[in-house]
Image (cartoon, rainbow, N blue to C red; front, side, top):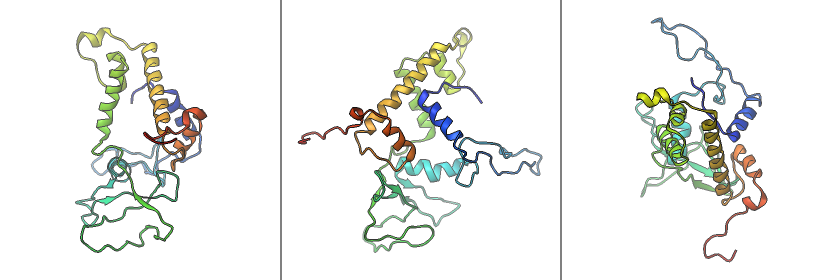
Length: 239
């Protein structure tokens, strides 16, 4: 555990989430394993939990959330489930842009007949259904790659190295690590830089449709001034 500097927008989101009444306590039962090791989850509280109020596992986050969002595909679940092939992420465009993600559907094989899968939580496809593929956020992105991105952001924002290291959980080697110290002014620079990046990203997102199927993002877009949220005209358009 370590303390890090967080920007105002993130503090507000976390405070609202924790005050929303969502269950935080994991249903895991504290017990000692047969080999006398204490399990890593003893039924504690987590800021983020699954719909069943359980803690996330690394495989769950990767297979169900991270890889589908980053790549636009649900990964193959081998060798545990060799019959579950890699599947594209589809969305229903009846909902606000970019659409509501649907349960996994098998991919279409070129030159082979295709029958829509039914049952097992898959919605029924009707004439009103507007299916589309989820565009990948950034193919092959990994959580560790996001750490690289954060470090690079701090380099761009000219954050002192000692403050960067504290944010990343690294130790500063040598004499520099002994004599350099993190100050409140350094931490405030980190908060201000992250807040600015958040606001710039919202303005860039506002150039797309001003709605979102994600309630948190939809609420954030509504906080933008009207002039900042006006979509930019496309090049060579009459708008």
